[in-house]
Length: 252
Image (cartoon, rainbow, N blue to C red; front, side):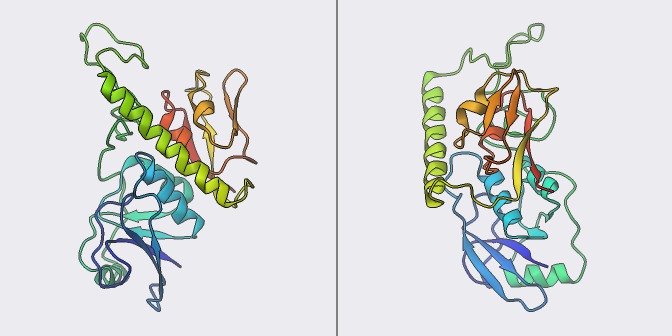
């Protein structure tokens, strides 16, 4: 069994980091021997999707339990699909947190402990547009408008042009990071434990997921279809989809 603890540093005496997707280190620990591996978080500087990609990394490392301060809806959904228990509200030194876990007093979280930021999912319904979960909004969000008028889901009315430019730059940075990682594998498909899947009832064939996929794993016919032999489970399509129609699922 392996436990992952989000940490501010590379040792057991460092503090538990409150942010899952943007922690400095993941300490992968054998709770019986307390032997551990300190893994620098490669997703800490991502503009978006850090939670999904960090959760995917925990699945790739065969982690069973994650101890952290907070977990957003993106990572929470991915943990659920991977069968990983996440325990939030953890603080103090990493060593002490693991000892407390071993006493059996900690219980798994039943819901995300934080809402998403910068247009990501909030996990609480669809009232405000779409983010990377089912909550405040995916991508750009929605203008408030009149209560008697429902604006189109992808309408950007009232969105400052500076914000749109910043979001476009943010997406480009994410894509560049993914391209860099793909290059590390020589353009070959790395071993993955999760892939993206499409809910055909939600998909409207808009093509946003196809456009952001760095592996060209998504086609339209007329709705989105993911080629699992090409998908790396990076989660960019999940983050970008304005219809909330994609999620990550564990490969059986």
